[in-house]
Image (cartoon, rainbow, N blue to C red; front, side, top):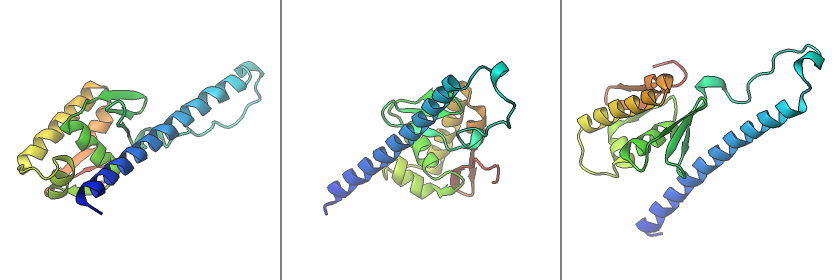
Length: 158
């Protein structure tokens, strides 16, 4: 297998994974709408225990959508366009709650271009700012860096 074919297959598998995440997210939304339409009005409904949310709550993994170049999180959208910030968000979201070494991020996000650790710090700072501007302060705060590693830490542990 040629390196070009291997790279293309890798890109396609990443896109497929993101599409499947989008489909799962949309299926949950459809399920919520259908369930709300099927349930009788509250006054006619017998009392029952509160149902758990369909997703894992506000700490579930963010959805990174290649088709819209956006990140979806807790009912909000942050459009990043075809940028380094979008690729960085996608890379961090692919392995939430894990720290990724800077050299691996440089290879995956910057495609091996010669960059310094300052490049990653700057991109992380800008990504946090964009998430905050989109009303995703908790997602922005979940991006951590330590010892030359960065991660999207959603479980609250550093």
